[in-house]
Length: 192
Length: 192
Image (tube, rainbow over all chains, first blue to last red; front, side, top):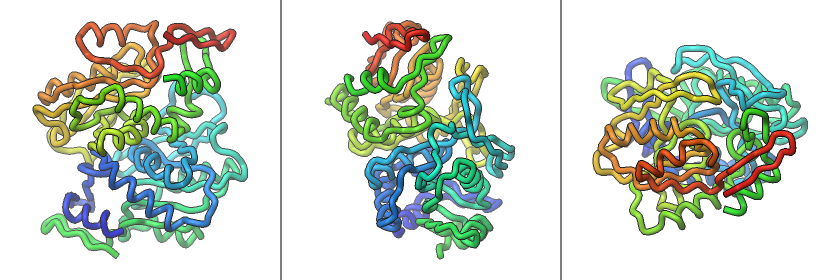
């Protein structure tokens, strides 16, 4: 998606350790017009496939998923939680994933009431790198008996293994920008 | 806002300890059509007041704020973070608030780049009870020299002190549903 790639080139910041900071428009400050265009693009890509629900994970996925949902007929958005709450009692699907950016393991929690057997689910998230968070959502869909119809990613780090692992497992991963290389010294970003 | 009150009456669940669960449409599963209507209502209420930016806090505020932003001319949405990340280095505004639902203190973090002196900010969140999270956002706006133009809340627990404290301090708090009482035995919810 050219608009997203141009925006990454313009406003993204490459940091040592293969860190791509896009917090000025994607995951701290949010450009909702861009989110809307991203939603429209996923709707075009996944058109013809019936989607019952969008599943994402807090926090950065939520805004993207909520803006995208209107392009899928206002389907419900469910966001997996990363912390237990006294308001989250009851039957839950829980799995654990390790976050490199947070440098710790965290739980991924979805209340069973919001994910049912046979539901056709689109998974959305802001980043795909090693794919751990996405694997957590897939595991939860599997437990629920829900069907993963597709996976929409804003920015995939193509030089990390998450995308390859998911595609090899048969998932239709549609990333709007696939970064093939970045250089912290020059600040350049190359796309597939 | 009648639509939100009706929805709370229909799908909200009252639990002992003054807990109102609205996770089927507001803060775990999200009804984005409802969020859109809530955004339109805040835009009507705050019309005529120039808004540069919407500030909210992860996680439940993000979807609401992103859906509302399009009714304010697609202004940027900034969401305060509750955990440090290696991607969040640099100058930050940080304050601490205590969460009763999570039963622990957590930081509220906004990168200084995304909140500037003189900016006119609308604060949005899903719940207002004791007002601790909202006070954290106000403190951060104060540090930044940004002006809080208004506070939009989906559900205010009118029997807790947050709303009164903020209004007495001069803030224009606009809650779309103000719960005056709830009864866990009968499941009834009364609104102002």
